[in-house]
Picture 1: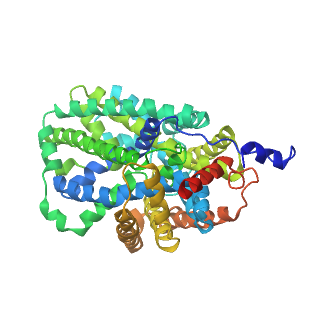
Picture 2: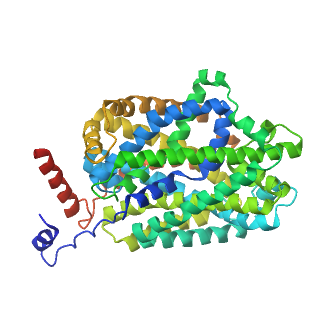
Picture 3: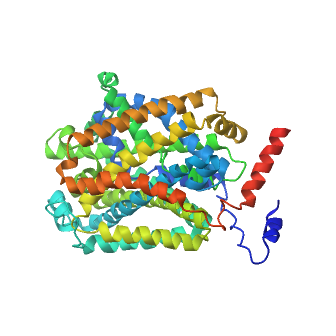
Length: 530
């Protein structure tokens, strides 16, 4: 039935037909957006340390194995679900099978939590880009960051002592992001990624070149690349490789399902996925070179070994790097390049996380793009601005991040793979779809990897994290605080996902009337019959 016929059959008083689904205008823009999502803060401040701490150059072997046997197969799974079923994560899983819908809402809620705290790190990076011109942190980068800048409270808790130096840049970040989201896929997300991602690459290449000419850079690179072959016999090293790959590629929490649903019907999914996966890994290795060259300089200046100065995460970005900026020739330029890169990488990732939520709301209630973007982004921004630019915001961010990664993303990905592969047995259907539209064909080995290797790796990761977090209270924080914002938040994701599943879909949503999706099904049936 055509969309016009469908509209006339409802009559003039019936609900309006759902708006036509947006698409990426070209495959190149999809690839840029997918890379922009994958290349985030973790590539810059997490991968170099993970590699160094797990065998140095030898880590590249388990890293590559994890990429090929788990990361790329799971990426293709997300692509297949989103592209074949043409919807947000909840709608795509619902169309796959009714019982799978909660998986989509679980992913939406994970993205809500991540977006709320991810924005504040972008705000910090924005301020530190400006601080680089004056080296505002002085001689004590650590004291300045936790004291003068964040004004961190002495103990975790729920406080509403707002820090203006964080609140106002965070507000600015949200205004910019909301503008991008309201503009839509082509004029907003595609355009932002087509501008920010090339700028990010250029800035980071310049940063790496500058770092390589610093005294002591060779010392840092030797520490990063020198292989410890004995590490390959350690199971924890392999687990670290698989764990990093899952987080690095933005798989398992709705982003790639949503983005692939905006692709045109004839798109090379597996070829695009290979470009995204290897571009992401290439950037990570580039980040490792730049970061360790700079840490080598820092170690030489301090008369210490690289192992004495190496760190990751917030410590690397906002303590170690400001120290390097203060000591390095043309340090202000290095600071602008580094923190500017964090801002651009953060924004391209944040808009992809938000799009998972916006798309789900559009599909569920039948709202237009502008209304859905304003309501969703406004709500996430309100939560973010209320909780994180406070004296206790860092404790909340740390706890939320640790638990949403372990029991939101990882556990959610495990449940999704098990449900799709073992209970619903949908892998042959998804494999056939990938083969139908792609140049690189998915053979039986893909189904073996998704149904076998991926669940085993995820089970190991989830069980290890569970044992670790129940054996001791996380970071020594109060039990009530970890129970509420850690375990409580993780459990609430599942409960609320089930509640959202039982809320009826709007009569104007694509779940009830989607002529484009029906046309696609008819086309596939005709091709199969031929």
